[in-house]
Every structure is written in C-alpha cells, then in structure tokens.
Image (cartoon, rainbow over all chains, first blue to last red):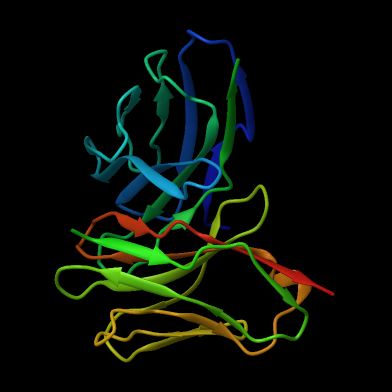
Length: 113
Length: 112
C-alpha cells in the first residue's frame, strides 16, 4: 500500500539535544511538507520541498532544519535552538499541481523535558 | 495574502442533527479548496475537495460547495453520527507545488 510513514510515533528527549524525525513516502510525490500542531493553534508550516535537493522555509522555520537528498525522504531535525519543541509533528506529501491534496502521515509526538 | 477562517469550536451536536461548519477564505487568483478530518492522535485525512467555482465536493455524507461570490466553502452533513466526532480543517492551495494553508480547525463532538 502506498502511503507516508512517520517514525517513531512517540519521542522523548532531554532539553539541549537535537532530535531527527523521520518521514518516508512511496507515493512518488515531488513535494513534501512538515507541519507543527499545537493545541488550539491549528497547523503551522515549518519547511517544505517541491523537488529533490531543494526546500523552502515555512512560517516557523527557526530552530528546525531539513534535507531532501532523496525523493522518498524528508527528515526534520529539531535543534536545541527551538525554544518550545514539544508538539505534534505532521509530515505530508503531494503532487505539485494546485488541485492535488496533501497526504499526511500519522504524526510524531515529541516531548522535550 | 492567503488565509482561511473557520467557525470556532467546539461544536456539540446530538446524533442525527444537521451539521454546518463555516469556512471563508481570502486568496489571490483561483485556489483549490479542501476539507480534512483529524481523529484523536492521528494525522489528517482528506474528506473532500473542490477545484473551481460552483464545484461541490462530497464524501461519506459530507458536502461543501465552492462559492466564489461569498469566498466560502462551508461543510455540511444532514445527519451526524457519534463516529463523526473529530477535528475538521478547511484549507486552500493556490499555486503549483505550493503549500496548503489551513484554518484553525473546528472540533466536533457528537453525543448519542
């Protein structure tokens, strides 16, 4: 079955540590996205990539980094510079045309203490 | 700029009641419009979409019509079930390869 896989589902880290969230898709989509979800604040875009080896900052990129070395993979690193990293992180992918919906993974809940 | 505004929740209904969740948008050009649903602890699932004015998207008893004159895309269902309890997001996409812009989400709770 085609889809998007995010791992792990739950992640715990100590403050000051970097952590990398995995996102893999086998839908052959060109575009991939990372969103952050906090209670009562909807979804906010962190980074997105429209093609391999290229990515753009979203609305809240500070304290995060990404890479897009392969079409299938778009890992997100939450660095120690991110002031409030505890959140639910959602990865998505899509075809590039305007009419195509985004397909979402099941998310990773990151807790930093 | 582009933005989406949804009615605030939570919305609490009895089973078999009629549902409307309002969504209005601001966009340059002619965006595509989407409704997504999120069940607790999960990612978002596409519920329906409409890609041009007067299109009606429908799925699982839910409907929404793309109204360009009122810049709206309200979600409706004639008879809700307890299993419809979830958070619903309205969204637009304006450009090729571009990002999806979400409303803040509306939580729906359906009581038996």
